[in-house]
Length: 217
Image 1 (cartoon, rainbow, N blue to C red):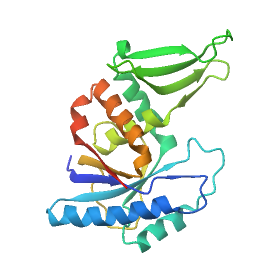
Image 2 (image 1 turned 180 degrees about the vertical axis):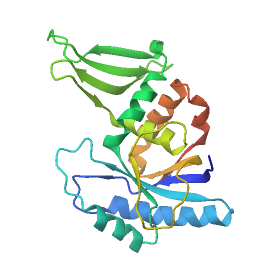
Image 3 (image 1 turned 45 degrees about the vertical axis):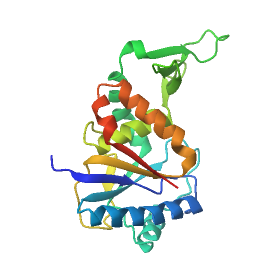
């Protein structure tokens, strides 16, 4: 598999947002500077987007207008992905975490139905929620932590998720998988990035933790 040096995700957005906010605009500005640095180092890259349309209850985002706006900032993304389509990858990731590092508790201790929450428990005893599951509706909800970590491994070419990623048509096609990934995010998401790395370190893919980078603003 041919890989670029960096898969850069920027301008992360939720589908209940009608348009870009200051966060996405700032992310685009930081990404533009990052691209120049990478290019000056004679490294290759691909720009990707992840839209969270899994957790929002309502969808307002105009995807075409969103992509066109990013292009106007000089950072045309090559790929767009959808969080709801990462579930198959999240399941593979869950299976790769040793059972002794996972803990499942009842969702509501006073109700006798089989509603449960599954956590990753790291070496310090800290818990990271991975999934909720209720037997009444036979339905599981995967958390942002497990889905975004699956997204990281997908971009590294380690695991697959069918139909999760699409070409935008905004650039010439490039390889999607990369040797390293960079997430361009506001500083407030640092805790999420740490959780993602801890999940990777707890899994059979722990050797890839060294290839995960964050660019905060």
